[in-house]
Length: 146
Length: 81
Image 1 (tube, rainbow over the protein chains, first blue to last red):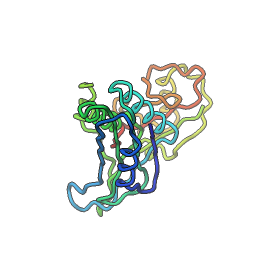
Image 2: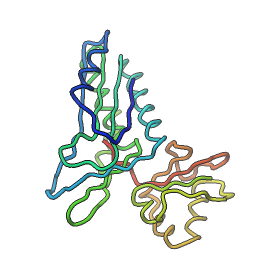
Image 3: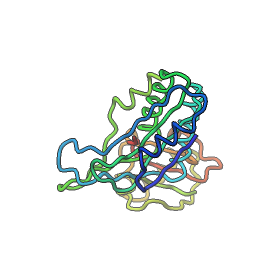
């Protein structure tokens, strides 16, 4: 299992290839990547603040639970912080399981939990100023299905 | 005890962290002490339902005990992913 919190960009191709190549018992690998998107137009940057120490602990706890619940062979979480431009990759998860349903479900679980239980805060910077992104009700509601 | 603030809570209070001498028994008692200090704390803690708290880097409730606790952090709901 790998949990990495970093400011620098990551190479999605290298990470996905490396993750898939190091599995020996899995028939399925699922990856998800989150990208900075300019929803309303005019987005200059996405600033991501986090809580060093707690961030790594919270992500590790969430990944541990995914591994246990879906009997994953492996899981990977990479999440960036700092100032990101539109189209940059913010984060990725990867899961490896014997069968694809477990790999998909575990990846969705990871995403749902790290959206609202890992200490990151997004701030959108536009020409008119900066605003903290508010948590959406559906993000909190998404946790109840697990 | 170290008290940390993140995102708009940090902006309203004006500092990212501070060391607080307190006898507060619970998180809520600590909030009450801070709010009584200065307006900027009152502004940050005006609506407690809009805030989350971590005690020694684990998510907690506002009635959590501070017995033996070294670090408390206040922040808005998280928006990762």
